[in-house]
Image (cartoon, rainbow, N blue to C red; front, side, top):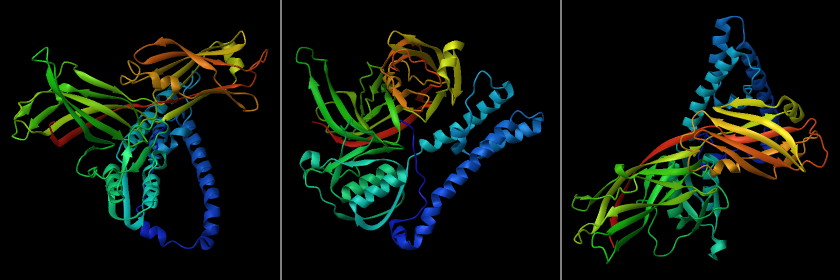
Length: 449
C-alpha cells in the first residue's frame, strides 16, 4: 500500500456550501483538468532539464540544479529517473542526495497525524465524507452487515484543525456509533451502531499521532497448582489511520510502568522482553496484551499504565519498470535503484511452459521489516506487460534468499508456448521507505476484575 495524504485547504463545510451553483462554475471545472495536465507536463520538463544539469561541466550549475530539485518538493519524486548501471557517477550521487532529502520530507508529512475541520450541522454521512476527503482515511458502514438500522442522523460539531482520531471519536459519539476493529477486507475503518450500554469513545483512549489505544479487556488468572503463578492481563485495541500500513508493532515491556489508585507501582511481567504484534493483511487495528503482576486484593484499579510502542510502517510505493525483457535475457542482469531500494533482475529465462524472472530486492534501511515479519513483501505487486502493453499477472513466486535487508524472489509467468518476450516489460512495485514510528501512550482508570 502507498502512503497517501490530503492537505486540507481550510474551508469549513459552511464555506463549501456557499460556493456558486454548478451551472456557473462549469467553465472553471472543465478547464481544471486541462490546466492540471499542462502544469504536470511543465513540471516534468523542468525536472528533466534539472536532472540533465546535474551532469553539467560547471560545479555551480550542478549545485544549483540539485538545490532547485529539492526545493520543488516531494511531488517531483515520481519524475526523477531511476539510477542504473549507466547513470554517470556525479548524477548518481546527486540524485541520491535529492531523493534522500525529498523522501525525508515526504515521510515527515505522511507520518504526521491528519487534521480535520468541520463546522455546523450536517448528516453524519456528510461528516464522514469530509473526514475521508480531508485525511485520505476511508470509512465504511458495517451496520447492514450486523442487521442494524441504517440511519443518517444530523449532528452538530465544531472542529478546527483537530487531529484525526479526536475528530472521528467526536463524530462517532455525536451519532452514537463506534468502530468495528476486525475487518480484514480493506484498508479502512468500519463503523457500526453503538450498543446501548457502551460508553462514549472520547475520554477512554490514548492518542499518539497516527495511533489510538483503548483498553478493551482485563483478566486476572491464578494457577491453583502453583501459588506464584498468577497475574493480570490487560488487552488494548490499537488502531491507526488506515492511510498508513504498519507491518508489526513492537512493545518493549521494560519501558512500561503502571500504578494503582494510591500511586503504588504495579509490576510488569517482563519475561518476554519485547512483544511483537504482527499486522495481518489490510487490518487497521490489532490487539496487544500487556502482562501485569497481580496486585494485592485491596487494589481496585490500574490508575495509570504508560509505555511506548514502535510501529514499523511501510512507506511510499516505488515502481521499478524494466523494459525489453528479451534484452535482459541476453545481458543476464539489469539493475534499478530508487528511493533507497535496489531491484536487480538476475535472469529471465523459459523453464518449460513457464517464463521465470529471478530478482533480488535490497533495502538500504530495512528497519527489521525483513527479519521475522516479511510476509508483506510476498504481496508486492509484480507483473509483465507484453508488446501491446497488455498486463500479464504472475502465476506464483518462490523465495530463494532471505537476509536482514535483502530478499531473492523468482516470479513465474505464463506468456504462452514458444512466445519470445520481444518488447515485453517487467514491472515490480514495492514500498521503498520502511519507517519506525515511536508512539507514547497512557491508559487511565481501568477497574480491576
